[in-house]
Amino acid sequence: MLTRTNGLDADSARQFGADGSPATLARWRRDHWSMAVEYAATSSRGSLVSANESGHFIGFDQPDLVVSAVRHVLEDARTAR
Image (tube, rainbow, N blue to C red):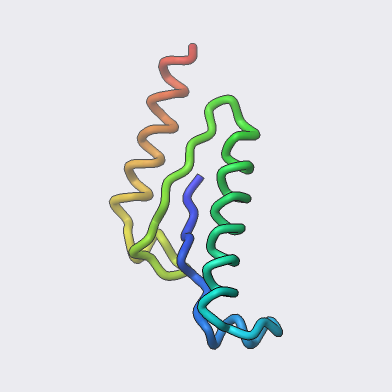
């Protein structure tokens, strides 16, 4: 699983009806991270990779990270046989 944890800025928060304050953004990031951790834990082989230097399109912004994650999945699949 790849996730981007820093994707809500004040302007975006206001578009969703939030006040965009630092406290609101910090709470959103904390909650987003907690949900990502829970989601990754739903798989016995789940792992969480943070793409902090990416925008919405991780494959364009950090292609090496995506390639590494895919290789990890393939290696796990090969060794699980």
